[in-house]
Length: 324
Ligand code: SER
Image 1: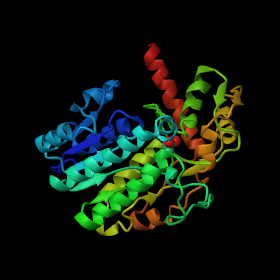
Image 2 (image 1 turned 180 degrees about the vertical axis):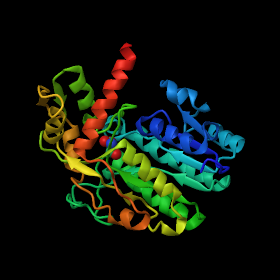
Image 3 (image 1 turned 90 degrees about the vertical axis):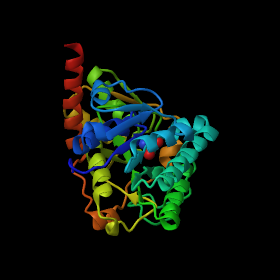
Image 4 (image 1 turned 135 degrees about the horizontal axis):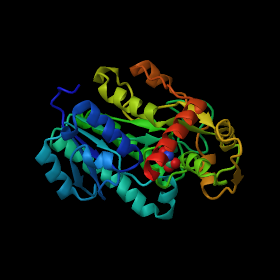
C-alpha cells in the first residue's frame, strides 16, 4: 500500500474518528500523502507532526475546490458532521453542515475525478418503527433527530451519485465509537467514552442514559479496520451503495460499569437520564451486519471486556505521560 500514488484528504481530521483514521491512513500511505483538514488546527502532537494540515470549512466551496486541485487527491474521507445531541440544539445548522458539506464533497469529487470517497453514516438513520434487535440492512427507517435525518438523506445521495455519476462512494453505519486518543463531541453514545475517564479519575460517573439502555457500540481499532477494509475492497464486492450496517457489541450503562469494576472495584455510577435518553430509545439495540460480513469479510475483534482492558491500560499510560 505504501508505494501507491494515492493522495488522501481527510475532512474533519481533528474529530474523534478523524484523528485516529488520519494516523492510520498516514501509516499506510505515508504522512505526506494524507492531508488533515479541519476548521481548527490539531491539538494532538502526533496528528500535528505526522503530516500536512489545511484549515478548511467544508461549507466553503472555494477553499475546498482550491485544495482539491492543488493536491489532486485520489481519495477523500469526509467525516465532518454535527452529531445527534448537538444537532438538536441547532437543527437548521446541523442540516446545513451535514447536507451541504456532503454535496460540496460529492460534487467536487465528480468534477475533479477523485476516484474514491468515504462518508460515514450511523445507527441514527433508524427510528422508533425500526426493529430494535438485530436491525436488518434493509428495514423501516424513521429517524427523528436532525442528525439521523441528515444521515439517511445523505445515504440516498451517496447511492444517487454512484448510480448517476459513477462516483465510487462508500459508507458505513457506525455504532457508538469508543476510543482513548480523542474525545467524541456531542453524541448520544459519548457516555461510553466519558465513563472510562471518570473511572480512572476516581470520580462517581453521572450517566445521562438509564442503566438498562442498550446501544450498539464499537471499539476504535475495529472501526478503523472496518473503514479501511471497506475502502480497500474491490468495487465489485460492494453491493451496498447507501451504507453498510456494522456491528461489534451491545451493552447498557450497567454492563459497562460491571466491566470497569473488574479493574476498579469501587467505581460508582449514578443515573440522571436527560433528553439524550429519548434519542437512545429510538435507536437499535443490536445490528445485523451479515451483508458487510458476506461482501467484504467484516469481523470485529473486540468485545466489551477486551475493550475495557485496553481502554483503561491506554488511558492510564496517557495520564502517566502527562504527569511525567
Ligand atoms: N455516536 C453518534 C451519536 O451519538 C451516533 O452515530 O450521535
